[in-house]
Length: 296
Image (spheres, rainbow, N blue to C red):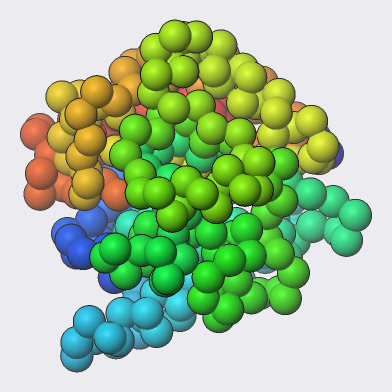
């Protein structure tokens, strides 16, 4: 399905209750201050920044966080469902990466019954824990498991009862920090993974090309989800969970811009920007360039 619409909707998820560090909740306001909307409009895109999504209440303790994240993901899923049903592309600005449950649940709900979508997941981490395997219990380490139909049933059934993502339509890039439980699940499901050593061996251009071909092989549409900790912290210090020896930020921008995003491209999600750790907005400005690269 080709995307002919020049319309882009931006959704800010001003919440970090899926993580242990709550300081990435201001990411939408940071990218708004840095004129993300103006940047996209300068490319001839009809861009609207939708109302940011906030928690409905402040949690009284850690046990309340799950209900908060669930509510936020439900809100986001409904908005993405509506946006995609109108044929518009989207930009989601997290917040922590648990927002991905809402984003891609909304995408799945917008598809016809015989359609599937692909997902390129760029991250230092696998984010495929369930509550049983997670050492921390943090939901930002669980979004892929939920989308694949594993873990907390409430998160697996947001917007529709259907499993949100088929394992053969998923590809992970940049992985270098994970626990055995999540690796076992992804390996059992046969999910395609390019670890950092694969990127170093094959080159990022080739890896992204292969990933693009993989997620589009059996699908009509696809999207990209980027956790900024995929990038080396020397270039992107403003992230929640930095991991050394990551992707080169400029190479990622260049490689993304080389892909053909005109056919079937749904949108992009950027997560885990922590401005309190940033240096002169380096990470935030990099995030805007990543978004721009996919929407040219």
